[in-house]
Image (tube, rainbow, N blue to C red; front, side, top):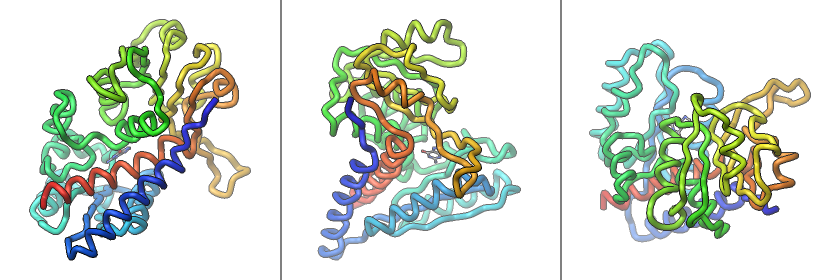
Length: 291
Ligand code: GUN
């Protein structure tokens, strides 16, 4: 069994990006600038955005964090997006999800200039992705592809089962694994809350990508020998023995599933750090495209 070490690979990627930024600076070029909008005070979202800002500093990007209150109206948020769309110093920006309930997420994502949509959530970019055109690929699926690529995990002709059809992970992942090329060329089954007999399906999978958000959902009995297991779950589970009072738990019963797997991602230290590295990669791409 081989651990797909997202922490290590994301560090490699950040080092590669930092090298590129150094060269940009030496050539007197503008360095990439990422902005992140966060609405409200959700603890997990604040932590993620803080990590994204820290990652920018680490590679030499400029970053701007825009914090808006929980009671921000849709109009106020759309005004802020317009401002970032028009600010030529900002190469790319993201709006951290989920948004408070008074805000229509789809309207908000549509308002982002597709050329600055480094999350790849705008329908134009999502459509390009589905049509094999060059575009911003959503960071978590992009990070999973990169992990599979760097560990030379064979995906061609394999049966990939994706658990969860979210717009951020499951849906794009199912499209990407079935695309022509590597990693891809997989036969994909997308499972969700209405799927019947999920164990029957997962136990036939060569590759399982679980993006459900239910701790320890995927048990050893649901997995065949030598399967590749990608765990996208990052649920905070209360734990008094830790300093923070919680621990991060994946969708996979790692202790037992890892005994059967050929490759497996740990939580934490698997997919999570890759998401941030690929957001940086998309921001670098956005800057390069402006040049
Ligand atoms: N919330 C959970 N994952 C993501 C992500 O990749 N991007 C944004 N903007 N919000 C998220």
